[in-house]
Length: 206
Ligand SMILES: CC(C)(COP(=O)(O)OP(=O)(O)OC[C@H]1O[C@@H](n2cnc3c(N)ncnc32)[C@H](O)[C@@H]1OP(=O)(O)O)[C@@H](O)C(=O)NCCC(=O)NCCS
Image (cartoon, rainbow, N blue to C red):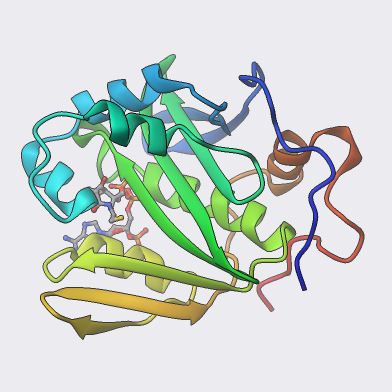
């Protein structure tokens, strides 16, 4: 059954929710439609190796067509969240709905902030929104050497299998334990004052 969100963000959000990371705090908020600057800033802060891990091929620069696709968020079928540290874009996580109740997930963090818990916080935010949107399965494709992503996604229940040089997952997921973000704030920011449809609230990790 498709869950219809009552109030997808149609403008660039000005509010965010603050979360602790190692040695500081990060602010998380939904990426607005067509909001290219934070995406370009995060890309600029990624090493060639990180870009290749994210896009599964060397990507020296973001082409306009890629930028358009990556910023074509609609708050419903394509949801992206931005994390900023000290006011600067530091990471993005997204999901794209690929079928009823299923979405593909991807994320990236600028190299200077790797290992501080940003990827985990972003994952918690987007899985919270996904769960509240009626998504029950997540798909992901990562490079065979991408142990950080396999570890991170494993924490929400994804298990990977080898597939022609990459690792692929297509699994039911659960929310992280313990929560790394204020999930009530995430839902409020994602869906506005109306909240998600009744019955589509984030599931617990019992
Ligand atoms: C994957 C990525 C987003 C993780 O971001 P991050 O902010 O460094 O992640 P966190 O600090 O939250 O750490 C995530 C977990 O991975 C673990 N980890 C990090 N590097 C690891 C490695 N080489 N092997 C195993 N686990 C590793 C961390 O210990 C942590 O687990 P823990 O909380 O149980 O200790 C980041 O490395 C990145 O941007 N990589 C390039 C892009 C990419 O690979 N995207 C994913 C494919 S779509």
